[in-house]
Length: 125
Image (cartoon, rainbow, N blue to C red):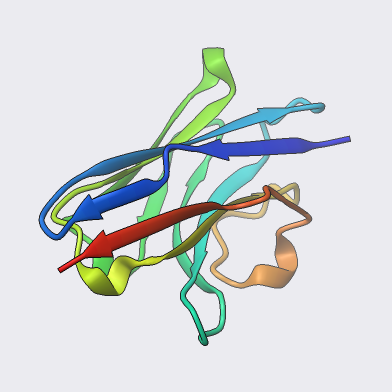
């Protein structure tokens, strides 16, 4: 059973930085794609970034490109989302998710089988 545990959220002022972590367990993840999604109050959950576990190929949403970076540490089974130059509109619950298909990066929720509990990120103006 896959378990994903996020951490690193919090309250930060606009322009600040946070690094989210997602520790994955319960499976061999070599063929997986790991993604980060977020859901702001009153909005649908949206894709933010994803990375292939084996090769480290990454894709980041255009609106956060240049500010957010996704990476992974295979030895620690951990995926990171480094968020810099945060804006109030980045306020959301951030979720880590795992796609087991081995078919490349997808930005749609339904291919991600397993999800973490989410971590709150609040950016004050």
